[in-house]
Image (cartoon, rainbow, N blue to C red; front, side):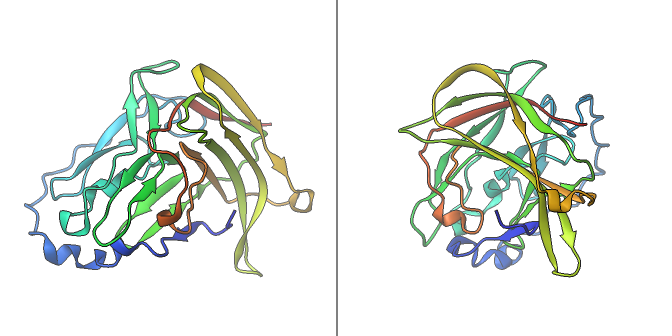
Length: 257
């Protein structure tokens, strides 16, 4: 895995004109005074890991999508804000669902197809993780500040693959290397699932730590849960998977030493 905290979208032709969006849309109406953010009720050690609280995100131009509350776990749903001139709206690949393990909601991740202007069809997996899509800068920001060394990553999932597809769950613990100007991977775990799991099933994935970095304190964590494991973070135009593959995720947290 590329250890940088963010990845560029290479070859995404439909983003080529994204810097022109502001000139293609009317200026939005003056924004109302924002409501205070909802108070998180989840007591898990991953912010919003209960996946019980979701909020609408409005880009100011009438495009609204949902994200988990808390700002730690994000999706690729901002693709929905792409204008028609660029082939939008993009697909909404993550949604809340009452088909949950516990609490009120869970997350439902579904692989979908996107047909932006001037390009071939692009497969977009459902992605939930410590990640944020930044369309304006044509970037996915991967990783969140984090200073712990968890022993494992746990939660509950179901999976309905299409035509032999696979889901992916992975976690990377990082420390920025000042001398080499890059992020070192202190610990990681990566797990794929390629069979149907009809009922919510617990997962508990032990992280593997590099002894060479035993004395280091991490500074960030990357978490990815994806409905099609063939996601390509360097070029979303080259993701591999099957439309309709669906991954349900609920109650995710770390086990700490």
